[in-house]
Length: 339
Length: 260
Image (cartoon, each protein chain N blue to C red):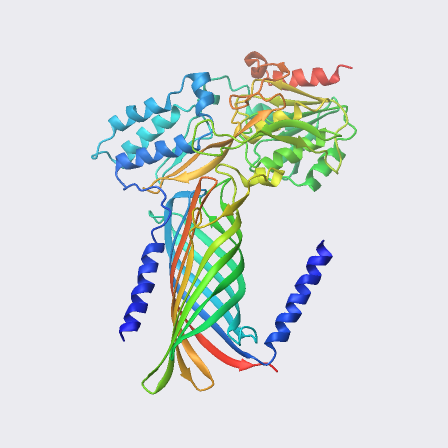
């Protein structure tokens, strides 16, 4: 019986030793612990802290002290949420969101501080009543034999079969307008699938890297990103991509990619940016946080976090708009109709 | 090279079968249910807790080597888990399957106590899915390792029944595991950047231990087996901390037979 007890004691001791394990965050659920947890997540995982220190003077260490001072134990969850959103807005990043059951914390100044250069009613007028719909794309042939394609969100999927049909239907057009204004992004694969229709060869379009550790400058070597030509129907004539400040995230990446395609001209306003692939994490109180984790660059290794300039800048003329004309579409048509 | 390796494995298999022909085999099948605590800082900085289901199929076969004291041991281990975040508003769904095989030396320390020691080579594959994450929703797990394995078997009689109490522990000593880098997306790995994704592991960065305590009660030709499984898997590679700690209650049967 003594041997049996020794045997059991040995087993229990081993179990206790081995359950002394790797620990994650050890925070309680107090307002102070939650804001500290939020600060830590950004400090260890956010990919633009150094870049934004250089470009917009972001001092993340100073922000910690500033916001911890503002926390008190009597705060309501709504007050805490507002405080956290204010702290996150200092990152000036549309990919940074705080998700709670009662609200979604967001930063939209990247588009709201600039002219819209977009009127949905006017766009609908150009599409008319007899446009076609292929998954997330709406398209038609304008009277001057210009193809007009509208893709409002890359959250709406598109397949290669859809794109084959669109390209084949528009094959007789002597130019193509791809209107991605107000497309705030979505699934990167759909954006890439569309871009593949505008190149006949594999092209270097940019770079991507990721954090390799908790330090603000711990990054991997940039990995080249290539755009492969589609195996389906590809566009072989001039094309214009129309942009505005609301082109964000996957749409920003699309513009980065097609700018490397020789037959494509980007017209409109600078894109909104959103160059970091976002990751998610969470706080002890259950709120979720989204943040930029993997920075993307263009083919010249420039950051695209704050947007991409068009090849030909143009803006919407309000006087023309009042007469039912979208001056950006008109400028694109003139460009495509010019030999 | 591949042909030579294949030939070597075929010969090893043939030799193993040859030295095991007609020897006793003990085979058990157990199912388990228990509690799991999971952490993977790639998915979340918080520890998730919940239910864990296991399936274990274990075979121990005596060989004619080392005066019949060397046993060939195989363990097939599958598990699924459903865990919740501390705020209980997010879930992790996990699953894995593993196979270990190796040799154990049996030493009859006393008339009713047999001690075992040896080594196992194992492969394990699985994943963890978090339902609230966007571009980092999944962590894929895959590892190969060599483990030290020890055990003790105690025979006794209880209420006129022949009973066996066993303890077994497997400790991975050296191996390799797949892991994304600290902030690397699977999109990037898919694009072809897969450097530094295979990490060397040892108890200093991946202290893991699988322990089982099992009681067999003879019931005719088979035995009822009830047991407790404590499976601790940890790693700290590429700055990503992970653990999966399971405590499970097991129940199953054991059959002892020979193949001529």
